Amino acid sequence: MVTSSVSRKRVWFITGSSSGFGRALAETLLDRDERVVLTARNPHQVEDLTAKFPHNAYSVELDVTKPQQVREAVKQAIAYFGTIDVLVNNAGCEVAGVIEEVSDEAVRRQFETNFFGVLETLRAVLPHMRQQRSGHILNISSIASFVPGAGGGIYSSSKLALEGITTSLAREVEPFGIKVTAVEPGSFSTNFFMNSYVLIDAKNQDYEPLISDIRQRIQNLIGNQPGDPKKAALAMIKVVNSDNPPLRLPLGADTVSAIEGAIEFIKTELDAWKEVSRNTAFDEVVVEENHVAK
Ligand SMILES: NC(=O)c1ccc[n+]([C@@H]2O[C@H](COP(=O)([O-])OP(=O)(O)OC[C@H]3O[C@@H](n4cnc5c(N)ncnc54)[C@H](OP(=O)(O)O)[C@@H]3O)[C@@H](O)[C@H]2O)c1
Image 1 (spheres, rainbow, N blue to C red):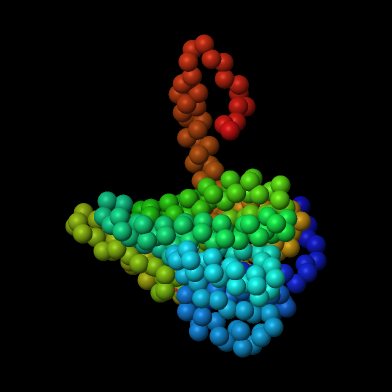
Image 2: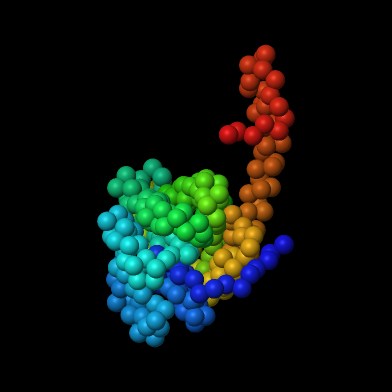
């Protein structure tokens, strides 16, 4: 059951507040009289919000790939508002292209933003949340962690890495009253494809049809994404208001279908290969049926 308690005026720290989900969430929160640390690589992009909400909005320059800037931004935010109650690791980008051809440098750039940037921000905020014995962390993942399509492997792997630390982190910080949720949007109408997405051209002719097909699909998708970022913002606020928030929040009917499909696929393959999978222990070892790896 989803229950919720009336929230006090919290402080939200949002990475990538300039655009898309980050901006929609910031605007929704400010309209509701909550306090928001708007972080952006270029703080001019959020000046309209600090001007409109001078008491509740505070902007800080932040590129999540710059560790020193991350620590400084968190320090400034706490000095200004006295606390951070909710951290939203939203900043993200996508490098698309085939596994064989995307350069190591591009892969590392992808992980610098989507994984190491989050890790750095978490590590800067967690000591504060642990000390205050409360907090909620939202890590913006993706439908791509359930359906890693051809050409999307590098992005998917960065979001899967994020899912991995989200689950472990939730267990590690639960004793300190800190909640953690992976938010998994499907296709939403943000600036992502214009602003944060790069498709690497095929070098080998063999991959040209796939890359052309992806390019065409993206062109067709722009402006036709079904998801409304404002509704995503409301769903995230609902989760943070909940007394019993989920570890995962899929957003969009497309993500719900993708997860249902993934569950069915895993179950079908698991059943088909169960005997092979099970019979791998030394003959003298008796493995309990419900053994869970620690
Ligand atoms: N839109 C979707 O359909 C969708 C679906 C699943 C997941 N997501 C995820 O949602 C998150 C937000 O994306 P969006 O759709 O809202 O796209 P967006 O409108 O392009 O917003 C991306 C935000 O991330 C910021 N950003 C990128 N790299 C950064 C860095 N190194 N440091 C700080 N900020 C950085 C951008 O800042 P600048 O303005 O400076 O570039 C921008 O504010 C991403 O994590 C994305 O993977 C989106």
